[in-house]
Length: 357
Image (cartoon, rainbow, N blue to C red; front, side, top):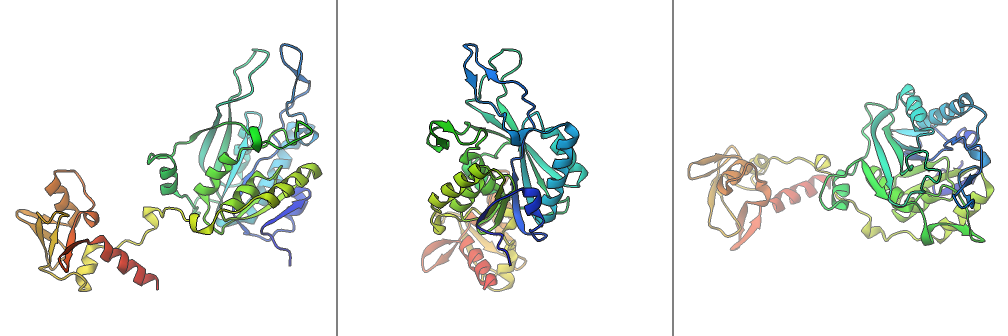
């Protein structure tokens, strides 16, 4: 039986799709031909040549031909995507609106459009248009009911504890990362690893399976391997496939102990404080303190606590004491253990751990 994990295939993705079972992948990243319709050679004002995207694989006879091609591969992507999986599709103004149209017609559920703003874009040499300084990504789940992965807390941590926005600033792929042969770029549209790092970190978990039907020089597979995900990629062009194979062979995975991501609050088991009282872990009448033991509140039989005139949940009473609109009582209140003030959150974490055994 074929293995659809940690493998690169040199072939036509439309044909290779037929070999893949339904619901095989947790995430798909698709960087298809953009159909840029570049009919002439591009030159700079000094008449030197610009290496634009004029490869045969990006050329289609008509919009109808391109649309038919896109509907086929997008339909197949949906088939091989797990029910709770998601897909990222990247494009420019040449094709992204057509892709979004087809995705909605296929009942993908669009979650975000993300703008990749390039801080070093190629200028518009003729001065007849705005500089094309961005590309657009569409992120979608398989359907409206999909329970897709979104590592919100990890992204927030990645962004200095601020919510991650849908406009991302990354340079185009250059420097040592850019693959070259005899001084020339191996691929005209190689994507930067930083872009895929964010996508993979945001929308997959360790051990998930990621598929790239237009692998190019292998950026998706490289990032997947580094981050402890399984990869499967298909690339039609032989020279790109060889470059991707060499690249993945040289790639080292990050130590597994450094790959855990911060758990989202919504995915954490909810443990009411009252449960600790009901189970006798903390008994009615037990004192709860602030860290300096200046505040002494009492636990009531119903799981509420009382301090002077203040009565209510551990959160409500703590907020009233510090004069704030809200307060996390789990990290404010302590109980006494052999003379030491211990956070009551330690009891909650111990309780959660026991439930997982």
